[in-house]
Image 1 (cartoon, rainbow over the protein chains, first blue to last red):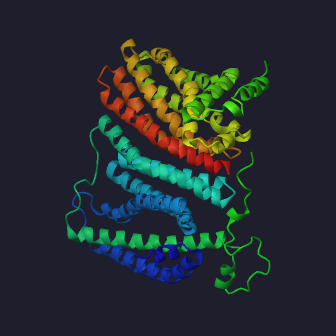
Image 2: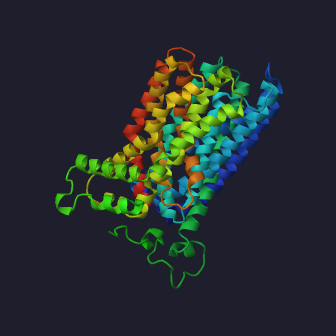
Length: 269
Length: 245
């Protein structure tokens, strides 16, 4: 049983080389799948018998809402991996996830509001799903705010990892508390619980979900590459990878250029 | 006696090296004793959250109308939003000074479980900022038109809710400990996590005022308090350790 691949994946130079080859595959397949899903959903899928053509926004809304939650889990999981095994790439992945997740949340909220105006007669209703999605956005904003509050990347990584783990424990509690909060105040206004039975409707939806997942992976790889470039900017391998002559006098000693090597020791007393 | 004199005396009165507490219980007791003494000698700072709570809940009748039936409807919201904001305001007192004067580093280095020592500090923080809200709540609730029969339930709900709020807040205070201006960031971190406490606390209060059974939200509040007591100290210790680096 070999865990070499796992540790190699955690090495920034290896990840940087591997991701460069992977990005085009994910990006192009995301484009193809999304275009196919959109054409199928907007042109070929039949209109809904109650909502007419208005329901078609779900082909963007549902994948975005799904990813907004999933990205939080990915973020917390990679933050935990970074915290436990001190893996640099995992922290870079977590840092890249936050903005993406917040963006998917905003898209889900925005499309939900656009759909709500003609269907419910209001842009915003204190529906449990809407409210917990809004709270998820606040969790992302808190995570990003905490990260930007630290100057030192290594400290920002670990502090925000603790927050992400605390958050992921709380996400189900928040979700169910919001569901019970509203369901006791008024009758259930849950929509879409019945699900879609017609294949001509769920095939484009599943296609769009797959397309969004591919799009997320492509964006995550690109953003993580940027994070790694920023974090390892003083490392030798970066200069080699970018085809520049290696720096003669590196600002930080060693091949990693990790700021942790530069911090004063903790023990002072 | 000046605050400074009190502080140095309190630090000096901690046991000298020869009789330093060897057990976690002894050390936790010493930490609690020290924190309580420091807080009582600066009662002005300590009472601020309580004053804030009283003033915020007083503003609601002034902003609305002094109509008791209307106030009775908004009493749960006023009480719980007030309690949430007051506990948020108090968080700045929790670790800030002890991080600056090196006390937390000493606690981290003393060889006893850091988690337990920080749990003791958080317990004192609750005694000083959570418990006063619970004590004053019957007065505020009555002023907002809650019937006397609802008061025990409101006190019970606040008792459980403030425990959870103190512990959730301690995580946020630990994470933002090293930052210069952290007030609004702390609100952004803590408030979403505190939403379940707010929801079930306000629900219990509303049901109590309406004279209905409150067991369900009270059980859920209790579950959240137990969960916070069980898990939050570890997150607090991890956060404070990062802040100390």
